[in-house]
Image (tube, rainbow, N blue to C red; front, side):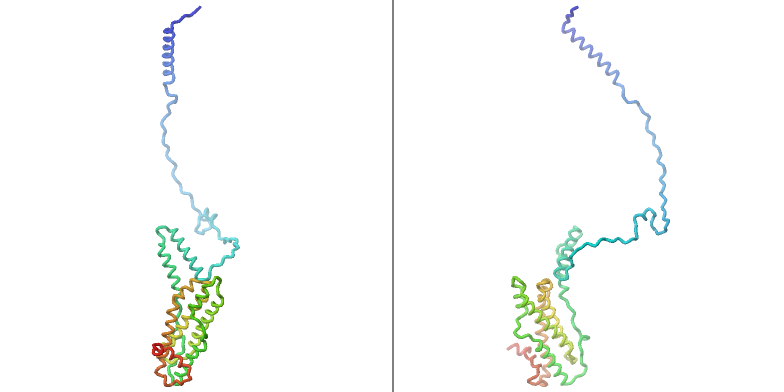
Length: 298
């Protein structure tokens, strides 16, 4: 049998089929795929119960903590190292400065400022320029004396100077300049500085041992302390290659120390001048005339 359907009939059939199919889909899948469930019911939590804390050995530490505590010493294996902390002021200052700088950086805004770090380093250096002064308990003071005692004292003080004098010696600053101007350290100049320092040390110690009439005690101590100051300053110059920071501090004081010696010797002349008639032409004490104000003004 042969079908000869008009296109409109075919279209109508397709539309009808689509409507029927759509109705079926909505009727079948429109309902929820999930079955309704009863509402959740809150269950009260069990009451909290503290865990019993026991300390069976009565050491004040809970038993569970005892496992983390030991009374046995912790022994660390030594690490082979050739490092030795610096003994020079230069090395110590370098370490202290960088440690302070790192601590200040780590502390952020609560750390020391750069200026404060530098100021502390300067204060540390300045403290190294301080040395102990000799005082009355360090010398022998005569409470009674006669003219012979005065002459003996004046001549002995003068002999200490002449006996320790280094002939043809240049100024200490000139020697130091020559020592540091070489590519390699100039050992000869360094040795000269050490020799001069030793001379001042001898003058200090020998003058300390001289009994002094009470009227000259102050001038005597001034002279001793200027010897001591120059000994300290020149000793520092002699180690300028090994410890330049220490030398720098002392060099800053050197000129004041040298001026102090000049004044101390002038004061010794003024002290002996009233007793000039007691001295003969061969007395070593005539050396002090070279330090009189009248002599130096000519």
